[in-house]
Length: 477
Image 1 (tube, one colour):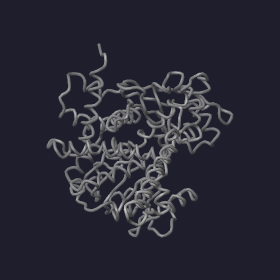
Image 2 (cartoon, one colour):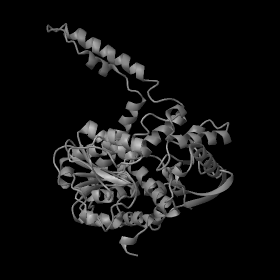
Image 3 (cartoon, one colour):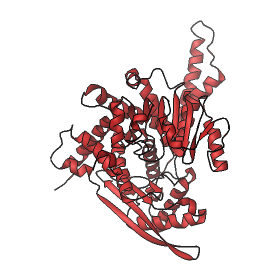
Image 4 (tube, one colour):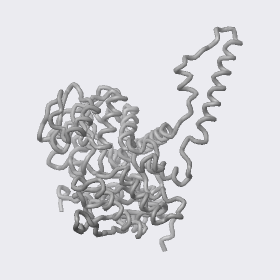
């Protein structure tokens, strides 16, 4: 089979093998790391609309070198075994790249959620959760799902409730799933996490002039022309943060029913509101609508953010991509064949197994919060404020003793300085630190090892080395 025809799993494996060929691993270890440990297929009935409907769901465990394993649950008619196994593998490598202590897993239900009302989705979700829970495929210390395409905090709340119902004496029951609503022991900042991680990754990339130069760009994010493919949770938050906080200009937004473009820039919040009100991107004012949305991937821009499905950049359109920098907000949006073409053309790609790791990172924070049974910042926030207030007061007092006019900071400075960090600020701080450190490690390998042609190869090598060390410390006899 040619690289042009590879399945999703084969695409991931091909990138894995590129990295393994540059590493010196003990015989057999590479195969163990690469192999998907197990995939469970469940078929279950639900009585809806006076008849029984049978649904098919999957939960794949790629690697339990560290437990629990972690990975989202998606609802889509495109869900199949190959997809969940590929996504589970990416979760393994992704967690390793950003130093999150999880193995890789993924789940999915073959369903179009738009075909059912809210009550029916709840019935289906609870029944699916029951099938997974009774097999320990949802468990705080073994397998922890999260939201993915077609699911949200709502579904995670139902899953957590179902787990609690089946384990009424389990103290850590709420740690069985992440991405829950804050009122259900979720964590502030989880909904925005993947999009925020995209922003932090780009900020770190633009901090290094050599990286920016390699992408044939200059300066900062401000003024950069950006095209976003997919205005779901990830694409929306990434576009919102980049435009409102970093001065990037969103010149194109691609959705399933077409695309809109505007060289003057699009108001992301207004576009999102239009889609939610009308159900379509078509008809949005102050922009040009194109029915062939995929063609906008090939439009001139500085930065392209594919944030929807896998395989949208492939061997047929890769040579026409004009973006100088691509950041993979989705899982697997660039096929292996397309990756080869882009690399040969000098297009820099910030790979998915690093770029969209914001979700699993903040999920880790939520899991830790659930196990510790205390909100982040609760113990130290006011003590922080007291300490900072005392310091300001002492600085004001000392300034009056050294023969100068008494220093008097502005009220806004005082308020910002003495304010103790709340949970959202701590989550963002932890995510920023995670994304910076991971890219710095990838950058070091990319810059210093001449065999490493791109950031994707650097990320895979780092991930595989970490996983290999974990396996070598385990009893495998």
